[in-house]
Image (cartoon, rainbow, N blue to C red; front, top):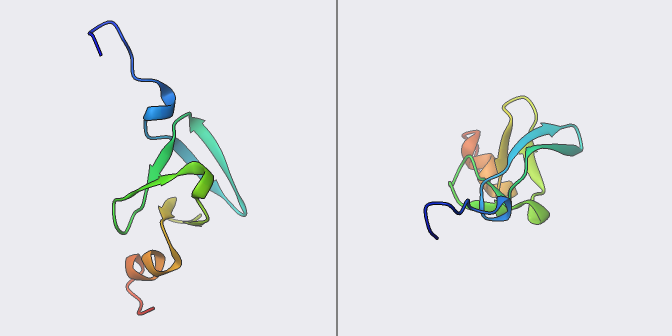
Length: 71
């Protein structure tokens, strides 16, 4: 990539608002990061999040880990 090229939105991290049962994409991108593990989660695979904390999780186990509970 040269200095005049911009990364495509698909290659970037998305900015997402987590709602009850849905998400709202505020800045397009391909993925969000898991709050517990830091791993990228493709938006099409995103299934777990916390509305109050506005965090995404890669799995139910990651959510329990983040909230300090045993799974």
